[in-house]
Image: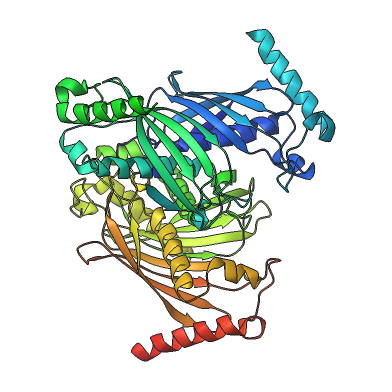
Length: 139
Length: 139
Length: 139
Length: 139
């Protein structure tokens, strides 16, 4: 679980957190999640892996406001070896879901060539595959 | 057509425009589009309408970099009277699509109550409906 | 002491935190400081006080990078009753100062009229004056 | 003269452009200014020069709001060969100054070593020195 507190500078003239910020909070939570499974940024970078966002699908379910805490749950939604999908659920302090999303990622080397994780970084491949299977079994 | 030039402060350590900025460029282009059909922000506000984002689906197809120009095409993808969907296509200066998206919106009064546009603002209803029909006919 | 961790989206193509973000971190730390002296945002708002930034002077002394922790010290630098100045010192995890600043603020009611805190909000006046005197005595 | 139009996402819950954005508009205008004197980013980069911000002093003189146009004047305030200072004046559409600032910069190679422009890039040195002298003569 990653917690973000809404900053004043994240609000807009409607008086709520601007919708673009949730995309940034997804990244904050994703970074914390990778950290928690032992794949912090420094380690990923050492392996020569970059993982750009290919797509996002998200739903804004309720507003958040300045100084609200947002608890963000992240998980591996699916993994094909080439494509990784994270799921996100953001809740306010009342436990109400305010935002849900899925983001899709691929893996590239720093020169921009697509990587095959199974061959190029089998340890990360194994971790992601086992998290994806766990998720599939829960369904 | 709305043109955004990528700012230095929009780049990230990968050397490309950070993916969260495209969500902001969607808003820039949407504002310009509404302006172009005679429904600039001041007029919408006068009518007591706010139009929050309910959801976004987007695909990142190619990177953009500092000082790149991004030409953004926006259109009414569909309109049910309660739900409005905009489509977006962003192209770089070579004419290559770098990003596509759809955003979904509803209509509320400033107190947060959902509006029925047909009754509450028939002129805007008519404009959006005719743009949605035009779009449907082109398919 | 307020701690900010540098987010990926705060980096720029130079590979360091973009300089505009420090202005935002100043605000994060200022909000936390006001909270710590019992004047959280909700209470200030209840009293009908807004406190816009009139000016900033800042020095960038060293770069910070993605995932660096930045410890931010904030204090009341001076207070005249009409003008409040905060001081800021940001240190990296090695204890090295990376950024220093002063920000100046006034006090207005929500309609934009300048307030005289001594008359309009004597309890906040007293707290700020005593913090300013403490600071002056340390010099 | 560089023109920025205030975006919706740049507003905050006070209903005005958040103060941190002016720092970003300074950069937008500085980039456009360097472009106008023949030293666009691509050329500066080719010469192996980076020019980080060392310090900023700014005054917020009036608010700006969503869709306001902000006309930004930038000039070389002073240049010592090692330190370059830009001046900024931002005006709203009524011609009223809303923000003034000075930013200080040094010159480094991509490895972070300080450059002496007179020796390392005499053509840029000459341009900046002549702009600084013009400015001094006008005083």
